[in-house]
Image (spheres, helix red, strand yellow):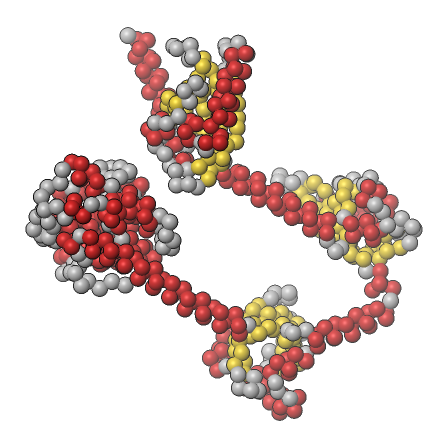
Length: 605
């Protein structure tokens, strides 16, 4: 007796432990591939209840092409366990991509333990399944990030290198090898000092030591390198110290830009200046320097005058009033606020603004400007800004068109939903208008509860089609004047599932199909078809459940006359454990304040 009680106590503690775990604990017969035990957390992970999982074998849960493989793997591991003598458990860990009940994939880590059952002597499998989807996503993202980094590193238009903490090259990209005349293999093993000009090697060592001492994580300097052919290359060197996850120094990352030309040729600099001016005057962007103190343009490239269509004489005549004369009156305030923000901006800070300007032809165009501080007063305040502007009129018009298109699409979805509801009503004249009245009541309850606008629209849309599953039920059952038989009522109960199957492939932009599936579920788990309870039922479905009951009891049916709203509310109170109390309370408030009106002509939308 004491042994049995101890065993029962041990089993109870085991169940408390396993049923409180987030990970799924299970046992499996490797011969039949039937689960003997599955902890409740399986439903949170896979969407299936433990009973659903135990009801079918493991190979019924995998695609047909994988069935033989599953059985072969189980047999192979049982054989390995038997070959080991079977006295000690055998452990395996696998990563498995599984499919949830709703069809979504989930990566799992499955740890299995093969052991011999003490009572039956049969080999059994004990397992623990853990959701590793986030870890797999992180690993994938990390691998993708590494791949992108290596691609950017190797194909960069400037020299790049990774150097160990002793100054020895670990890796050099194509550009750096070409710059210094070495092959990638030839660079490996060289030290930084070996390719640096003798006058500068010592300074590089000192700067590296400072970085390792924590005085800085980066430095930038112009320096000389010695090519393999002994010629000199001037370069801009930027060095950053890469650290590990724990903050420990890992290596130096060097960016080396060849600046030999700019260092050795004044002519090249002058040509560069002419090139810049040429680019400014040929770029399709409007480029300008604007004085925000004097409110006038200090510089404008040719595209500014070409785009606006004013002649130089007209622009000169406008003087400091040019901007004020061609800026749209409605945009004056927020452009002035933009200039005020720029006046307080830090160097390098980019601020953007959209506004309209009028061309000489009278046409208004939308422009997008990106401005940065350019010149400062002695006190440090910004006096001039450098701006780059593009014409974004087509984009603005596209945004307007898109908003109008979305509005038309939303109306179309709503109209289609109403049509589906009317098709259902056409088969059952006794419930004519039922779905529209439920939609009106559901919307009123959702508004009274203060639900978000999108949730209110979802309740209304789901209500309009909540009985679409009745299309699959014979009309003679729907319109039968007497009580339904047990078989007939069972058919009626299937309309929620049938409705879900009809609607699940339609993209309503909200979970209409799920709500239709759940609208006969009850808070205490007594509903159908899934027996959901509490938070397992969506709020929209809870609202729809109350609205459906109140409307149904308040309306005439073939098998009884209308019972009235008071009777419906009494039914809700009598079965309060079945309905969400906040939804019921909102419905009662609507009735008591005289706002509970869901007649056949109730307005929707």
